[in-house]
Length: 277
Image 1 (cartoon, rainbow, N blue to C red):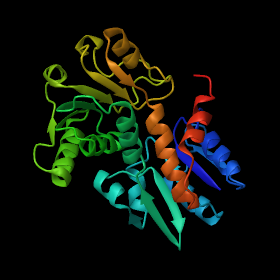
Image 2: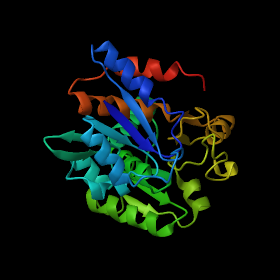
Image 3: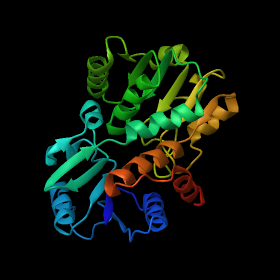
Image 4: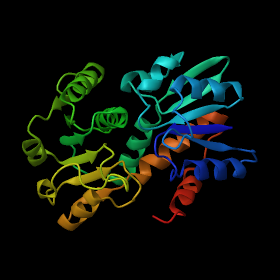
């Protein structure tokens, strides 16, 4: 038994991906949603959800918006990736300990490597410095981006992520994008790591007029699969890749952490794609 804790997660494809892969591996694999948006009474504290699943014998939890940073204070150990990013999206209960991991970093990096192998990557603009944005920032550097320019509606959060990336990867690997228009003009590509573009939060994180035809554009949102940002980017002639890649590959790594069994990425991708957008 595993689960996903988050807010507004009823349309998540994680249960199907995990349960289908589990069945293919001969496991009786149950994946539950703990959606704090639809609780019948007052929203239970995060610690209470963690403790309840732990007592009930769950192997672990996936974690999504808005709990990827908050959950850290409730954990015993962090993986190197989770510690570097400062956010957790997978918790494994093992040996009486709560182990925090970040599979978003590898998930985005693997998707980038498969979709943007020949893309120019001297500068990239990252919109959003939350838990997912932090994973994307580190993944971009790991994939060879020279400088990641970071912007967020909370300037302090953006500045903190810039400092974190520079400490981990070296000075000038990340910079604050105080002028988004100028950063977009400089960028070889951009990534939306905010919830803007979701079915429940339509729109684009930056003005479509800032997109240039020779840039690549990525989105971590996968519902809908073609966000307004990606639609506008395609219209401009940009190379694009959707949030499905990160969603699938982070699940591949999480499945392995929960079960100790390597997942079939192609099968999990097929399950993901079986959904109507």
